[in-house]
Length: 536
Image 1 (cartoon, rainbow, N blue to C red):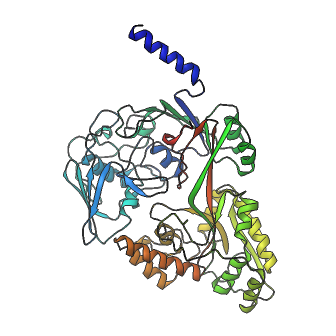
Image 2 (cartoon, rainbow, N blue to C red):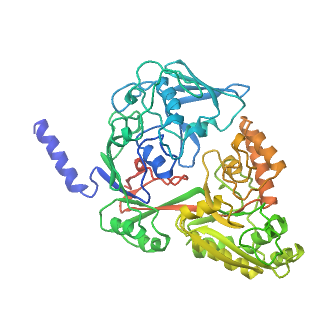
Image 3 (cartoon, rainbow, N blue to C red):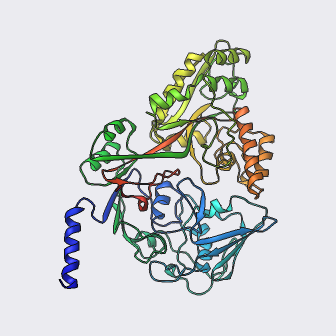
């Protein structure tokens, strides 16, 4: 048998023994990326898609712990003001160009200058006062104050090629405007593929809005070889249509299969369901400021949410395990803190509160509401898993405690607009934390609103606690790991004791795959297809 004949025989055998797994994979996303430009829009589907093509200086593993990526090592100075990154050498961009420190500098320059960005990533480099490259494979970053979350920020965006963006020669990063760069490409140059040049395991082939993103394997990838020759991402926003596409064999993977279909899918021999814990907490936020507060009746204009006894009563009236069992079908973990146990900054001594209806009624009476009051809960009905049903269950539980509660459910865009106008005394929402762990919800959800300090950006309950603010700010300026985490635990205890916000549960994220396939769930809920493999 000559060599050509032998190869043909091997291919034939493979075709017979593994017909079900062609080297192409098709996945159905529940939401479509708004662009394949990795710096255009800080949005879940965009960030998940970019991870196939564009890599970060440092990455996050499935549990959001920081891991090396384009930088193979890093260190910070004793005063915490200077970070030094050593880059991997020999990495090629998809067009064959060499990856060097110059590309990271160019990326940092473009981030605040992406034309028409609907959700800028500027905050991810905002704390960097200077970014320099002493040589092609070293980057030094200085900050005005110690900043322990720099690695998490740098893991949040992909590095682009300066040359593919039309810039030749050196790059000097200057905060507020990099000299020598006349302008920046807009996202159209990425959506048509002309600038879509990363270092990741897959290369851009095409992006057809409303139809597909098609990627091809990067055979020169520096890391583990990608399994699939081609990957196709299709947006199928309707839950039932996604399930139907999987069962019909039109797609191999779907994200966010509806909870009500999971038992049926698990029993279908054509399907494998994979699930994993996420960092997303579903919570209730109180109006801590308005008086009178919208949606509250029977209090003579007072806002009962300002009284910690009322907030504790609401917490005691809610049976979190029952919601997890009856509403979430087990696809959640009851929560007492703002991030799950596997993330940094949690205090294992904080126990899950047992529901106690009689104690809830006693606290309401002690607070001056023996006959309760009327309340309306605001909630989206299409943003989180079973969001409106959860709000309805909470309303029933509060009503049993004496707070006659109704649900005002609406589509997410309307909900967030009304929430931002402070139209709710109590609302249901969710927060997916980054690798920053407890620091992520602390600075966004419960720190006093302070735009100059970048704190309280999503604190739409207007909670304000000077003691908590001081601990959060100290944690955010402490680089030493153990001290930083101890401060986060202290802050978490303050939040729980004062019932500043009411965590209900952490979502567990499911994916459904064609039988014979498996994948690694990610805590950030991103669907990353490089982890999809034949299960045996």
